[in-house]
Structure formats: structure tokens, C-alpha cells
Length: 252
Image (tube, rainbow, N blue to C red; front, side, top):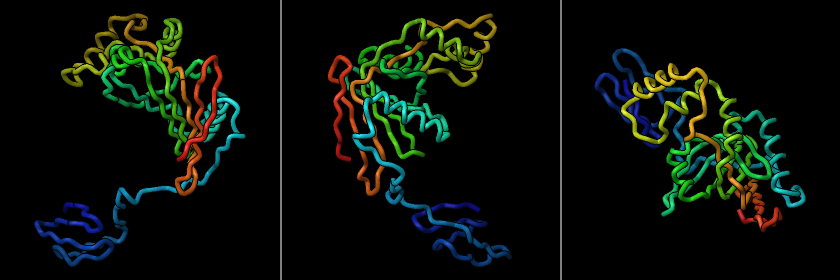
């Protein structure tokens, strides 16, 4: 028996017989039995998938500095037990404007910026080398919140990269050697064999020179709080210089 969903109907193939029927009905007897579909719910149209946000609000009186507000939201996100709460979208672009985005993990933040670690020779690393600008997005749907960051990117110090690298599990440290990130490889077996070779090569596992951290130094930070009827709250901080930030409200 096969199934094919078409709009609000379901096409069922049963022993070379086919029938197109409306949702939620009993089917005639096939091969001596009756086929009943009693729990089938029509798949919603993509255009109909939406949610009305009603949890919280965000006003200018709620904020003092972008870093104080990020810390507050970060702690609330941790308390909400969000899975991989430190996952963030990292968007980069080549010197000629070709964009690329992927999910990475935040590994530290302060007034200096937001830190993540990766292979410097990866595609994002090559883009950041020629165009050291990036955008970050945190999306905490459980709290109906986003934080959007744009900024200038710099590499972390060797000491900072070494310290974080040493804290990683052994398998992750080996992976930094075994995987030539973003390069074309022969197959999965090649990758696993490469990992085995490095495992036998090292007693301790040093940090590869091609692996380390980046810090996104923010120039704008937007805090987005979902509100009903798509009239969301959007407060954006803009760096004016010398650590001074302006605050403005954006239309949703």
C-alpha cells in the first residue's frame, strides 16, 4: 500500500488499485477487508502556518544597555531550558557580496563581543578573511524572542583559542585535525580513516594552527519581542563610538 498526499485528499495505492478520496472517511473493501482512516488530518498549507505571539512585551524603560539586556534575556533563555540555547545563525559574505549562513554555537560573550570557534580554512573562514563582517541571530522561539547582531569580526588570541580547545572532548579535538572543513572529500570512509590516523599519531592533541576563535564586535544589536497581530517590539542599539550606544524603536 502506498500513500500520496495531494492538497486535502489522499491518494492510496492498494494491490494495484488506486482511489482518490476526501480526508476522514472509510474506504470500500479491498481484498476482503475494509480500510478505515479515522485519525488522518489534512496537512496544512505552508501559507496557513502561523502563531500569534502573546507572551511578553519590550519597552524602552526595560533597557539600560544592550549588554545588560542580553544578559537578562540570556539568563531567561537558560531558565526556559531551551535545547542548544547557544545556537545562533552566523551570516557572512565574500568580498563580492555572495552571502552564506549556517548555525554555530556561541562560546562566550562580553562587552567586547560574541565568540565562536571554527576552522579558519573553512568556507566561512575564507569569507571572513576577505570580508571581516558578520551578522548573528539568536532565535529563542520558546520565549518568542530574537536577538540580531551585526558587527566587525576579529580572531581571538591564541591563548583564548588554546584554552577553549583544551576544554573540548577528545573526539572534538581529533575532529579538528581529521576534517578539512568545507573541502570536498572522497567519502565518509576517508574521513573516518583520517580520524584514526590522527588518533594514533598524537599522544596529547595540540590545537591546529588552522583552528581557533572569532569575536563578532557588535555595531548594532536588535532585541525583538514577538507581539500579537505581528505588531512586534523591536528595539535597536547602534554604536556611536567610545562605547556609547543610541537606542531607537523600529517598526515591525
